Structure formats: C-alpha cells, structure tokens
Image 1: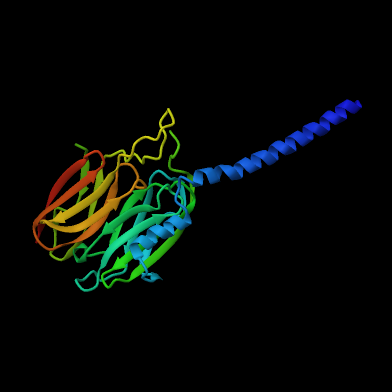
Image 2: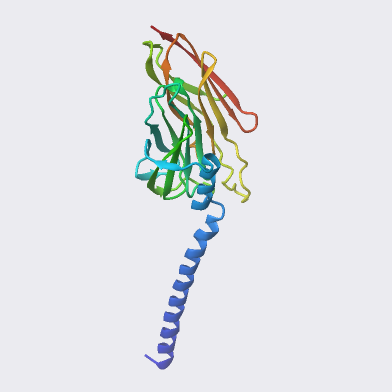
Length: 162
Length: 106
C-alpha cells in the first residue's frame, strides 16, 4: 500500500463520515418540513380550547377505544363511549375527537342527545403518524371530560401520492 | 347517487336501545395529497351526517378529512315509536345523499 492509498483511504473515511452526518441532519430536517403541514400538540390544544373554552377538562367518564398497534393508518377502527344515564337532565351533548400529528387536529365532532340511549359511537379514521388521540365529551351540565390514547402506526395514511 | 348501506333492526321492543350502522361509498379526498404534477388534489369529503327519527334529530356528526374513505358510523338510539329513520350526508361539491329505513316498535 502506498502513501497515496492511505490518504485516499482517510479521505474516503472522512467522506463517509461527513455523508452520514449530513444524512443525519437531513433526517432531522425532513420531519420538521413535514411538520409544518401537520397539526402539532399546540394546534391540537388550540382546537380543544376552541370547543372547551375556559372550562376545566376532567379525566374520566369517556373511554376512547383504539387498537394500540395499528398496521394500516388508512382505516383505523375507533369507538368512543361515555358513562351517562342519557336522560333529559343528564346526558352527553357532544363528543369530539382530536389528533396530534394528522394534517388537521380535528377528526370528528358528534352531537348526541337524550334520544341516543347510549353515549357511544364508532367510525374508521385515518392516522398519519404514531401519535396521541384525544376524545373530549361535553355533558349537558356544561362539564367536559377527556380520555387520551397513544397509538403506534406502522403504515401511515397516505399524505404523499399513492 | 352514492351507495349507502344501513343496518338497523326492523323490529324492536319499546324502550330498547338499538344500534344503527351506516356506511356510504365516498372517496373522502383529504386535500393534502399531491397529484402526479405535485399540486394538491382538491378536497372532496363528506362534512356532515344527520340521522333523524320521525323527524327528530337523534345523531349528527361533523366529519373532517381524517375520516377514512367510505365513512362508516355506528351509533345508538332508543326505539320508542314505530316510524322512519332518515339519514342524510352532505359534502363538498354539492354532495348530498339520503336514505331511510322503517322500524316497527312493539
């Protein structure tokens, strides 16, 4: 091995290290670029505040049922149920669902009444990323109750062309 | 007219809580996906769903792009009188669809 080869070896090593560092930096920059078109925990909080206002948000009563591990983010079964006698005086008025990292924080807003009999509904949603899902229920007495679930999504709902 | 499927019991006992399942065919284009030229495909979703029982609203939902294609909704109501359940979907680009089923309460 000549001295020149040694130099080449070194520069190649440095080149590889630099590329790796660059790729690392790009890897950090890329999600940030995507983040701009998506909801953030802050925008989710803003969306929730839009519904709740200044009222306190209590934990409990609501149950958000979503699989913890999701293979396909394009259609995720979701059930929200709420403990309530559903009478004229004491019923659930509305249930809202929010996400942290979808392009928009809002998912669905359902309005119920005493005629519902049971404060529960199911649907199928899209999830763009591994994230937190939050359900907020509004009672007829004006109180708000919440539940949140962390889910892992392996195949995200398509944001790019498919 | 979009194809809609409703699954609700034809007969129920008075006061019974019944489950209603609805499914409608719709692409629910989010408006966030780029087409082959890189421009976003315009949003085309169902924005509102309303269910009425003998003319009285029992369930309403505001839908967002995060709802999966072919929106599926399940909810409950108390069967208190014989009558009709009316379903209505309203969406972008003037989309509307209606469906109804009869229920007999004994």
